[in-house]
Image (tube, rainbow, N blue to C red; front, side, top):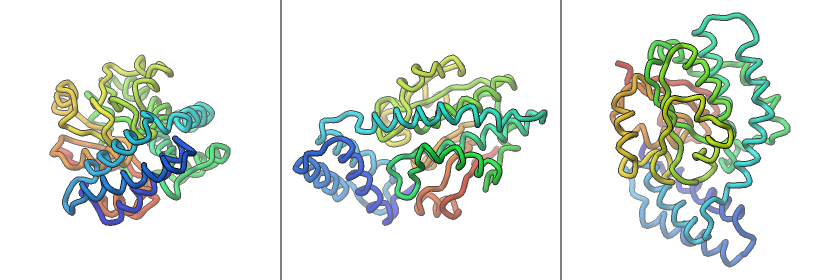
Length: 293
């Protein structure tokens, strides 16, 4: 996805948000915001991939703050909220005797609802105490774009690119269904902390590595997946996948720049730029399959 003029405001809003998470020092806040503006001015160019610009800006701000993980406490809160909601999600998915295809659809829906865990995206902060009810309401509504029937036929060798802390716990319901169907799963998380994205710490803390067949990282703390930083094993996994499942907007912004095989984008359209690029309205829950062969 290419940069959109709307992205500048959102990006600088998030810069201020993460700086406030890191420090109460007003002078350091000013410095972080100014460096973010400088980096945006240096890198912003129409037609350039959005992920490249946002990566450069956030990495510069982290450097100025001297903080490698400003979102750490919020990620812990996300994980705690996900722990609380996990039994609710499992009950919704497994509450009656349905086909494997329906189980898969429900697990994907639960995972997409988990994408609501995105602190710092304007308008989509969901308080933990109301997430339970939000989950139930959205589950009953279903997906706005539902390509799970086609995805169901492609589960032999899945590369699953995770998004945020917290929601990765709900992704494990999808893993369980894929494994039940005999599929192979390569799980991919960020190589180092960036925003509230899941890292190896989340995987090992919750023993998620035991639910998949192979574990890889993106190789860096870039937004989404930067193919220049990606390990060879990840590029090879993409090439060999029967289906790539991409969670969240950042992964969409970056993976949509490449000519990959069948790719399912699982996300909630939280911003106008991503929604517009997908040809959708904001606030949609989607499991959209592209490059189907």
